[in-house]
Length: 240
Image 1 (spheres, rainbow, N blue to C red):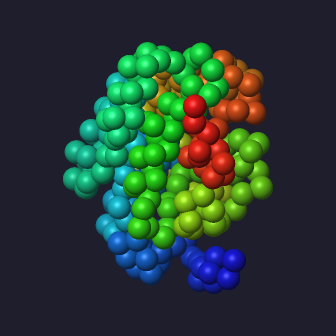
Image 2: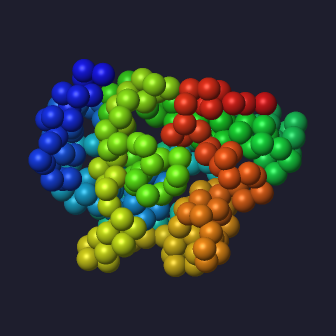
């Protein structure tokens, strides 16, 4: 894609902060960052807020988050005094699902789990991304085997925009060190074996030797463990 190649050349040689500043200037009011308040996202939030980079920050409020996640969310607001925009599930969709199948239907089948992810995360994400051209994420190259062939800048066909992963080449130790050096608030569940933190009913601690994402939807096969936020359009539509 020609547009993507042009941006790659424009960002070449710039520091992480300068890349974010350049994109924020080039795509003013059309650039957005999604946070789930994990290690990586807190590092990027600090890069944006501490340097007053005009990038809108948002989160998906699924209604099933850990208490520790809400604490990090609130402390982040207090520390930076910057807005974090919350996107909620549509009430009618959520209400119909729970009324029909109960609050924990996602345990019963992959189809039910994808329906829950769609209602609580995918559909709100679509609304959040609407009208934007650049989506900033906290994805790192070594987080899962499914992401090995990705690059720090890529075209998202499903959402029809460009995704930029500013800390794509950072290791987990790089992230931890950055968090420590800058005294950034982080989710204490990370210290208890939770490398990836999502909704409380769908996330458990990872045991030594397990895959990075083994704690997410642990009752399902490894190949089905993406929720759809960074998957293809077909996956986004996977709904019972």
